[in-house]
Amino acid sequence: MKKLLPILILPLAILLTAAPPASSQQKIGYIDSDVIMREIPEYTGIRQRLETIAQNWKEEIDEMQVEIERLKQDFEAREILFTPDIRRQRQQEIDRKVREREQYISRRFGPDGDYFRQQEELLEPLQQRILEAVVKVAESEGYDHIFDRAGDYLFLFSRRRWDISRDVLQEMGIFIDDDAL
Image: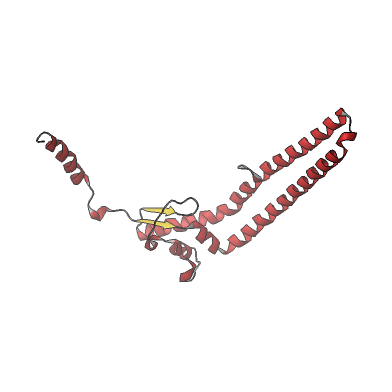
């Protein structure tokens, strides 16, 4: 036991002497960029524009699907009348239409699709304004770290007193009711 005591005391002593004093604790804050974004007046117009673009593309996709369904029904209704070559040609035409539809969906809504590029292009100026306001508030209030809790859950628990979303909105010239956050 006597041999074990120095082995246990040494790491404990190192930890205690290396621990920073309470005065050097970091100040951490967070924002909810979804809330901030919703409160920016321009965001509503951008969201509506994106929804209109997406709706138009969805209508085109629906039209493609209607055409595919029409071709399938026609094929099934007449299949017994077709020669093997015509049957193969019609099936290839249906398959081609299905591939075209899938490619269109990918081109418009895929990870590198038109929708996300358009969204990025339209939202970038707003995101830049938010970031600039966050930096100003963080520097003026002495924050060491600011986290964004929107999207994936970065925090499972956060005390409301660290939420600086209202300060960021005020820095941007947007004033909201106490109940809005």
